[in-house]
Length: 99
Image 1 (cartoon, helix red, strand yellow):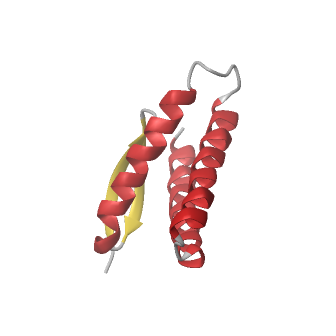
Image 2 (cartoon, helix red, strand yellow):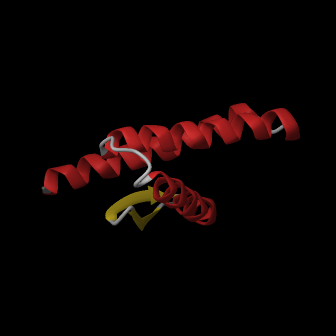
């Protein structure tokens, strides 16, 4: 069973469908993304898309470092990230239709 979760990333609202057990980690991911985006804002004159790409690169870099130092199950980690990206893309597409 899934539930709809309202998220806010850099002031924009997104709705994503999630499994209840994913809520805590997704909210933590939103906090991480907001923090990374906030740290990049003002440091670059690029648009929001470039800032989002740099944010994704920073998070991926941290994931690779964790994999190398902690021996994480990266295939599972990548699947979870891919699912989150799909959910955010779907929510973003729905939001774009509103504007």
